[in-house]
Image (tube, rainbow, N blue to C red; front, side, top):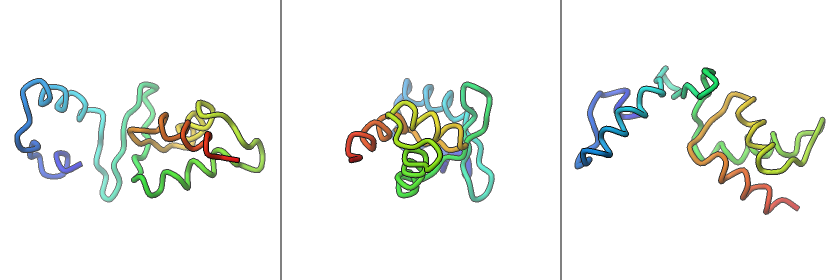
Length: 100
């Protein structure tokens, strides 16, 4: 996000990491105050912070109309809702495991 706003690369980044970073940054867009990612299905999804992720996962996992899905279905519902964060799949599986 800092690179998209300021155009300054992270300090002390190595060559391969810099190349990968510059490739990955092409999929992200900054629209004040939100960060969006263009996913493989060409849809723009809003990147949310970790503190909001658990609320979104709860809403997608325990929804009253078709609730208590597994980790993969929960992560798919989050993506369908238009949200994204980098550890979505891992977090959704962990969330489902701790759900009673």
